[in-house]
Image 1 (tube, rainbow, N blue to C red):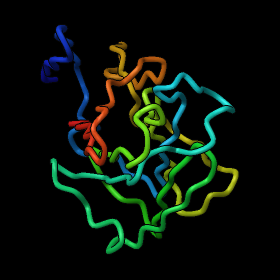
Image 2: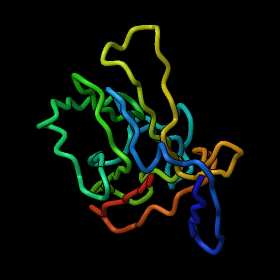
Image 3: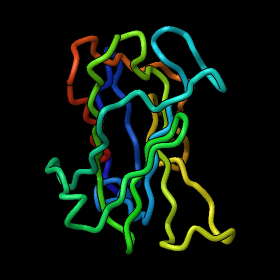
Image 4: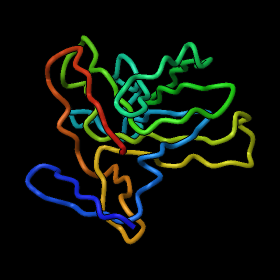
Length: 162
């Protein structure tokens, strides 16, 4: 097992056995869910994802989601993209919208569904979130932590999961 260090803000975090993050996650559907906006709206009060675009990346390079057969869907606080087959990625990004910074997501979660068929035999899995905690099994998404979403409009916010 290798030892990996992450520098986040003013703290340094170490994790063992995070190979899944380097090799990538594989999901047939990925969804971004806004949990809280900068304005303080949270839960059922959040009626849209409030991002202009969602991107998946592999080794820092954006994947061509349309070439992979990706179809986008917007519903309430969710923005999802579905593929005919599971797609591997080890990072992702979203773009802030052109409207007020008060609508920006500051608490969010990125979830994945492994099967191309959205039947009842699967579960949504948290892939990433606005924060992460160290646990005995590695880095775990923690959507209770607020993200410092930039107030500039049209900005790309990238989360590298390697």
